[in-house]
Image 1: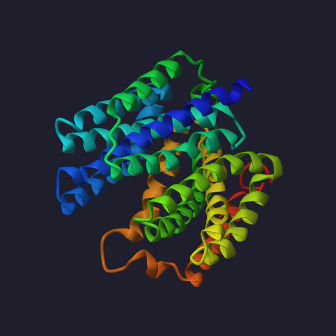
Image 2: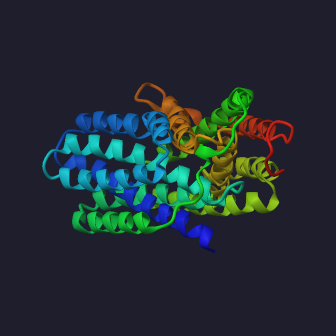
Length: 346
């Protein structure tokens, strides 16, 4: 029970932090044109996701993911306050805050449940729900700045007081440990990016349908928690492969009914904590970097097909594309999680 206190607290912090980011970004339309908002959202994504690998490397260099978590929460509180002074500065601050928090929080969550994916699931689940709730508050012209700042400060104080798990920085390491797992890491990162791309298809299709966005966000959050524990119980490789294949018909039928879409999204997102933890097991000495690559770089890569242009999410939503991408993802995950390649749960 004690082992889940830290990842649950980090998950709560993740939800509040992403809610603050969604609130800031969603409220930009109140003070600038849609073109200006689009540029700032792109800037935020570049910082929040693209900067994560660099933030992770720096965190691992300092060997202090707890400091990264606290820094991220403080910067996000500052971003909420800055919104009323200078919206552009607020977005910059929020982007840096998100990058730093994700790598620190991800590292601590991974280390809190070593060799198990439940910690990553508990940490990652509330983020997507928090972002959706923040966007909903912004659309409703509700900006509870004082409440958000107080929550971020209170959670930061609580995390500061918590005992952190044993970190892997001083553990012995073979000279070729990193090199021999390079291919496995690349395969897992590609799988995470492909899963992210499918998730983005449905996010873009449902854009503007705020009720559906919140519902699929909650389904995604629930799927991550369930998947983390189910993978530990059933076996990472077996569960991931089955969940991704089962998600295909549900997601294809999801365009016709939300009742198919929600369980499909839950299954799609349920493999996230397993893939993140599997990646970390190939980078044992670099937990923050592993978090930055999986929660940041790979997620950003999955969003590249949806950059502003002539192609829309609907162009990617054909059953052939969704099915093909998820089958490829399932095969990549299955191949990367071979016992001969890395010592993980079947």
